[in-house]
Image 1 (cartoon, rainbow, N blue to C red):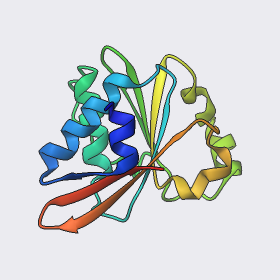
Image 2 (spheres, rainbow, N blue to C red):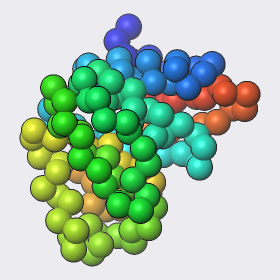
Image 3 (tube, helix red, strand yellow):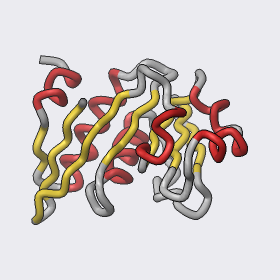
Length: 143
């Protein structure tokens, strides 16, 4: 069973390291211009997931939540654009920031709080739901 099938069924992890490992496995299977929408409450592991993706692409820079910068670009064997849409309120904000340039190759984009910009995301975006189950455990599910 491939990573996409496993994620559709839901994967439970027991630690941040396990969550990052699932992300690394997904990242290895992503097309160069993929958009990954990460849904989940504060503390559900979204930034940890992005860090796992970055590890696959040999990105040495530490991955942190880009809340105050809105987005961060990382370069490794692939380019990763990490967007925090928490403070954005729709397509108008996205257009003003010209973020659409980063959802085309060679970038892969990871979007935290994608519910704020759903109308802007491409139809083929992968929507992952991360849920904190307590004691460091997470559930990760592909819609």
